[in-house]
Amino acid sequence: MRKVVGLLILIAFISSCATAVPLPSVADVDAAWHLRQATLKPVTSWQVRGRLALRAADQGWHATLNWERSGERHRLDFTGPLGRGHLRLVQDEHGAELQDAEQRIWRAGNAETLLYRATGWRVPLDGLNYWIVGLAAPESVSNQQLDAQGRLKRLAQSGWDIQFLEYTHYGSFDLPSKLYITRQGGRVEGNPAADEAIEVRLSIERWTFKQ
Image (cartoon, rainbow, N blue to C red; front, top):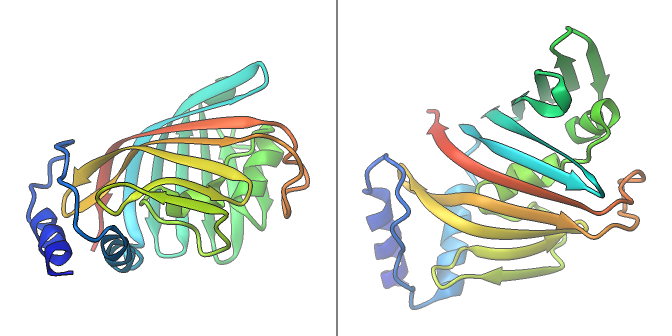
């Protein structure tokens, strides 16, 4: 356990510039994973910039993503999807609102459902809110694999298969920088429209953490 704590303390003093230098294996993978969860769960204020690509059947789109979170409030800006130029999606405790480049507005109780209704694309935003920092969402997990550093390598949850392809140091945190998320199709409980197979690729370019 001391080796695990020492390793994470060392990570905390790494420069704020992102770097993909590989880490050595830890002696106790499970202990490292539990410590990572305790460290990352309180982190609820951040800003992420990256690139998002989706594909289902013979259709696909990609966009630049700027995701800002402050507690329970989320603002996601998608630039470039479906030729619309820009979509802004906001969710807080009161519900979700989406606005497009033509100032048209849609509202719903949930951001994931709202984005599907407006664009026809099912992006797993509810789970991605946790996966993006390398955690499982607080619900049942079908399967979970850890890497040699005690980080999530693969996760099966809510009908989705999530592969954490790459981690990078951002400030004092070691976080996913490339995720590959797929669903094979079939009915998913709570998502009546989620019948088609879909793949989501997310590449993180920058993290900013707020106080």
